[in-house]
Amino acid sequence: MILGLSLFSSPALADATMDRIEKSGKLKVGFREGSIPFAFMDPKVGKHVGFSVDMAHMVAKYLSKRFGKEIEIVPYTITPKTRIPLVVNGTVDCEMGSTTYTAKREAVADFSLIFFFSETTFLVAKDSGIKKLTDLNGKRVGAARATTNLKAVQQLAEAGKFKPEAIVITETHPQGMLALKSGKIDAYSTDRSLLEGLRMKDQNPDKWMTTDFAIAYEPYAYIVREGNSDFRDFINNTILWTIKTGEFYKIYEKWMGPKGVVPIKMSPAYKDYLQMIVYPMGENWWKKQK
Image 1 (cartoon, one colour):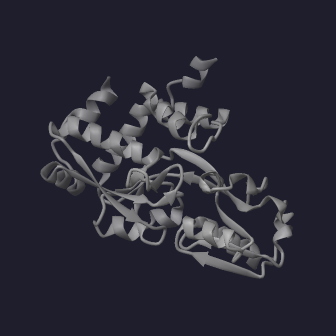
Image 2 (cartoon, helix red, strand yellow; image 1 turned 90 degrees about the vertical axis):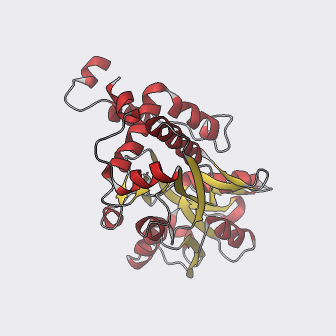
């Protein structure tokens, strides 16, 4: 009840982002064009869709209730390279997609609660024979600019864990998939969830596979500007409220359930995390579950 009231009640003091949203009636959100199933451009409907896009609409819904007026989402297409700068310079109020939280990134921007976990791996042709990291020796490996995936690939190569012929940098994930299909690269690296999205959207999905091994782990969070804690907390409360009411799981099923765009089984550990963040620490929640 308290959480619900905190979502809808107007604070005595609000940060600059909340003030601007209330006055303009617009929430400016940065979405990726090819981060399937979190945020991507659907040519059939001509707009951004995905798990994080639906979560953005939940934020707008609760903002509308809080301010007593309709809050409209104004979408902006962003890339891995531009997502943080566009939030920091005020072009967008937040980025809602599939961005990995890192301490280095938090030095220049603020982040919401972590809402998803993935891992960095590779998409390859099924007949490529690539099953472990060293099978990429002498191969051309691709990754998107300004991503944690690219950094992980570069660090492993520099450490001598594998010796690629070249590391090819693309601007977006769809460009990476195109490079893989055209033979310009032998493997493309990003989060497993996104690779499965690229694979499922391909005309010949059975031609490709994600490798079983992982080289890094990716906790996803939404990006907001520093110094706007009221807006950040509002996004956090929306995440918590959707988990508490079950709306979060409905959106998950829509995009990542068995009949979703990219089926991703929700692990018991991930379920435990989602439930844990709803309950304040120190209330013996774990004991109650027993």
